[in-house]
Length: 282
Ligand code: AMP
Image (cartoon, rainbow, N blue to C red; front, side):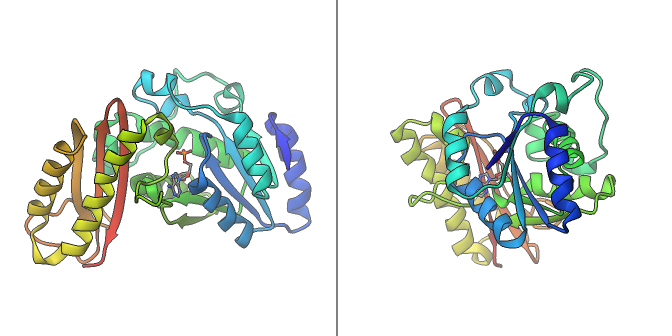
């Protein structure tokens, strides 16, 4: 595996491969890697000739400074995992290259309603920060394919929107959410949970599968209320949202089911905010 810290060095290396007609796949991450990240790398390896992973804990997407300060950093283990998983290129992006002019005056992206609902509503500025870093990383890596996880459902919608806005020809490929045997969605933030909290956190998966199994036989709002109550009485002290929404627009459903639905949950266990979602076959 080639490891680059300087964008120019990596660009030189990748441009040669590009000239040879090699297809470049890209998996952007914030590190503290787990098998969910690796599953995206495996998809890239399957579909592309060269797979690039980046690690950069992007400051502009954290609306909560404490969350940023406490974000797990496990760079040595990440490098070993990527090497053992057959990653071709690791880009350890540096803040002064991602944000050469600092982070005070940044471009604004028109994301429409996506900027204000669900994650956008509870984490103001979050998706602007995601767009900042993804735009810059795409310009540096120039990949043919970009691999993203469904775990961050709304983020996938935002990045697809961004790619249209900036007219980037990259193909977006979305991989399924990898879970622990307990159903808990793999997440870097899980490293900050105690074993007891990990057990309690499976309540999210239980509720998503309950909504999926029950679906049309109950109104969305009844399932949403039930799931919220269940989380609050099973270890979660704050629920930002449980919502059942149209898959394509994220418009919330209350008294009737959309043709294609997704259930999305964001809730706090201790200080840790977890998100998850599931497509509902109505
Ligand atoms: P992150 O490091 O959290 O920014 O995530 C980097 C990429 O990995 C994003 O596209 C995430 O959606 C994806 N990802 C995170 N968790 C999982 C998971 N459990 N399964 C599949 N992909 C994931």
